Image (cartoon, rainbow, N blue to C red; front, side, top):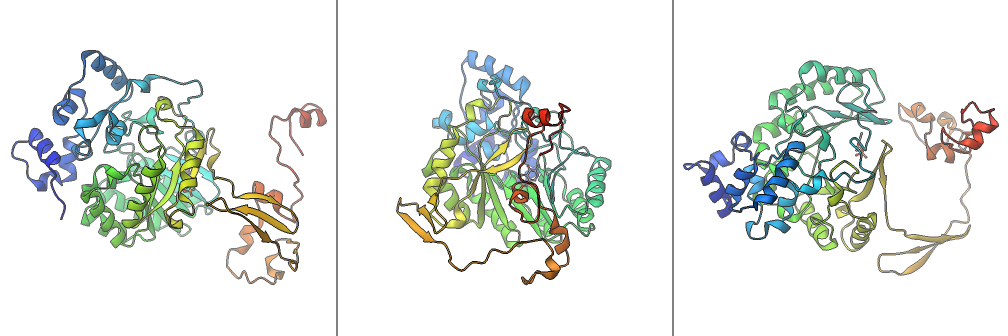
Length: 444
Ligand SMILES: *Cc1c(COP(=O)(O)O)cnc(C)c1O
């Protein structure tokens, strides 16, 4: 049902004079004809840059290469390309060479928290597994910008096997998030092999795949790919739409195939200045997503990676967007706004405040309309001292792994009744190290 738009037709004909729709819709044809230099970009889009600008762009490309599929390029409105959200996400800007004061090469410390190459183990029960170093296009706002174009290659089986062995050896890992690069850059056979190996590990409950293919190269989502994924359920897929113009007939078809295969779909947007930093744009986007059975999952504050300063908004912009969504639209259309903590602390949700005040009897809340209301606390609730001895508890937690829940971590540990820890103290706390005779060991 997918159509060849006029823009697609004209771009396709410039690439190959006798091009037919079936070629355009072949993801390998799209990859073969990816645009990797400025002249081709100008030629296909029908625009021309000033000589000075080209010079500045060349310098940018030396550091951060360009690669965009003909399909994604065809979404750009050439008449107003400077303001075009697709152009801004795909075409280099000399601003990328600006390294702002707080920029970092690896702000999320993914390399530091990596026990084996390509695997980041940050949270207790799940890992991020980079199975591909390549993408079908290079997003200008990539958080892994330092690696883009570095090694245009797929990790060999031996490298992937190290990651698989790590997961095998860590029974606490119940959720494996395949990312990259883009895992759908792998052949169906190779991805099938990885998924089969993961499925053979009994403690892996859920497999997730993070891919931008439905947005930048929807033709990659073939019937064969989807039939293969379906064999490995539960498989969840998260994609990365940032602006409503990215939702086209072709991308809708890709999403439909995935959803029809029983794959729950989520979307992770990045808040980008000049692209989607507007409540109306974000509301339109989330509505289009849910119409296509995609649940908005996260809205990311732009990371502190080098060369992204021109894309960053204040955190207040994200809160303003969430404020404009909660209550105003369907609850399942509202993503969680998160800041991925520099240094590897993980994702931290950020929200407008709804809890205004409280006493032992009542809490005072406000809703999305600004109505201030109260909720009366119960008179009869008997606080139970939880000693984490689930065997003796009246609540019926009769699940096999209940005893594994014993240890609480972080703030949950501070809240736990049976735990004696009363504060979490940084390693470098001077007051505590004086107390311990200056050996620097924090021991609260
Ligand atoms: C985002 C992320 C995950 C998954 O986090 P969820 O909140 O469960 O989606 C896991 N590991 C790393 C390193 C991540 O950055």
